[in-house]
Length: 314
View 1 (tube, rainbow, N blue to C red):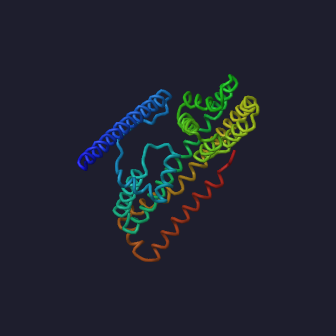
View 2: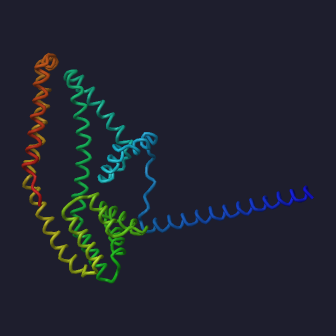
View 3: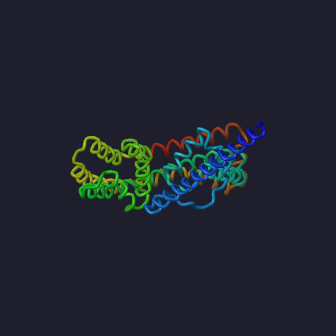
């Protein structure tokens, strides 16, 4: 009897294990089918990110993303639209900093090696700010078209969510990419306020804030979004022309701000070219080092002041 009970128990456990295995395989197959269907829908909508090139420095990238510095760097890179991971940018920046330090030390004097390295770090961060600002400017130039497409879609009876998805499909980058992110967030259940608020945080500008506020209030209160967007489109077109005129008028001042530090660095090469070893002798004493640091500080102050004086918010 005991043997028969043991056989029966073993058989029951075996059958239960087989049943669970079959259920697990069925769930796995259903999950893969759902994932394939989702990939097909996103590919048809043009919102599926491409695999792209193979990523480098993956281990460093994973570790860097866990730190506060890495997360901030990732946000800045996302705002620029560059196809670079935080790990790749960090390695490239270190390589550029090391190269500039060696060049400054070899061509000028050993004292200028650390200074050139610090300038390399500042130049890398400035490059990110420049790319981010350029992307914001391109997005602002597309805002009238965005408002026009959404107004036409809502006037045709489409929902605001559908209108945003339609604008994402028709517009080029960066507007198409950014609106695609908003449409994807709305598709997975995010609210209109949160999705558009994240868009305004990624690309901060007065024009975008006005557009986001108009869409949020119209969606929340159920107002006449078509007439509001029509008026907003005309206003954005006028602001676009005004910004272009102001930028043209201030182009000479902007070039002057960059010419000031370039002249300072060029004077160092000129001094060293006229008399070989002059910079090394000058920076060999504390007084000479202090004079060089003060000169660099004054050039930096001049650059910042010229940029501040030429900044006109439209």
